[in-house]
Image (tube, rainbow, N blue to C red):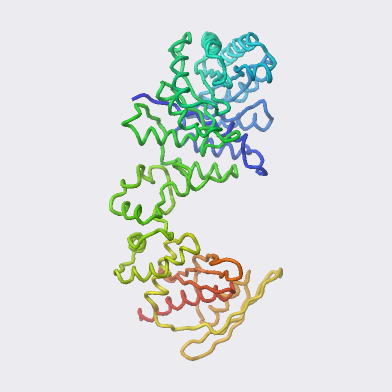
Length: 513
């Protein structure tokens, strides 16, 4: 099998499309992402465009000084001004494996309208730039050359430009689809043509850099691989200019999942991909769509009853990849209105419950209409429904009333009336917020100390009929107890949920005596 290098440009092309209002990545942010990429064995990390700003220069320099496994690349223009190229070299020269990536536009519209240069001037600038990079690196690094907007360029001119770049010292020739214009068949044909016609083609690595303006980035990159490309460039999560770059996780997944189709492989540790994706999303502020391939929140989730039944019987029925191989951490069984009883049973049994058919049916009878209103249920929801609605324990305590204050004052107060064994107990307590004060008052009334686990609020219904649903858990001597409360008043719902959880705890304590 032939190895394909993965060139990550998340820190350069990806950063150019950070969500509005988030600003650019700091040096620390860039180093964090670069470290994760290096740990996952990405071959090349394009750390930035040093000439663009002082901050970018310092970030590339810092990454070059502190990451020694992957090749660290810096981008620069192939201009008549030497300082652009030298700036890139000065930032990346500290790397054990430095790479300078220089580029110039080669399509007629770019040369004429943007560069205002003739094809001959572009040709001469290419030779000069590549030779300068080669001289600066002194054979201790890699020279990469890109002809910007190659897929709208004339083929014969591309052959001329790339032949000159190779003869001048380029080690990698990148053929970018800068505006996402190409179709897969065109990419395949272009690589075959260039690799056959370009002088010295056999001496270099051929690379593809795709954009997703027409939604073809992944297909185009895979076509390049099939045509013989040695390197694919792109970004984590497919971020990048406009519609984004090739999503590298998709390229890696295709090669790993379809070895019957691809004779190529990568050295990437795929188990790191999920975590890297989440960190890139967090640091860039660019949220990953739930249905995004490989790294989306729903990528390995199943909500339809037919799918859940198949996965329970044999995972390969609906999972062509193992979630754990991609660092996925979500719940594979998603309980929605489409889910069936087998999924309910599977989730409850995975949580340690032994349930009868009657109990599963009872939980489903409550859960299905609830899922229709709130969209999705969690395993905790099913556990609480089982305990609250199906396996009810004797009511040791009962809530008579609960009140709590809000506002902007630092401490809130709450008062409750609890009935226990026929006796009414009133208590007032304070807390950091109205719910904290409420739960402190209940604890005080009962003379107990309870560790709060989770507290989740969710709405049920719409408009004037909307209700607040509170699900809460408490912990006691290693045991966890959950409760659910629903009301149009959030304080009342919170008190009901907590009282139900505490009731279970007290019942368990009495049983243990």
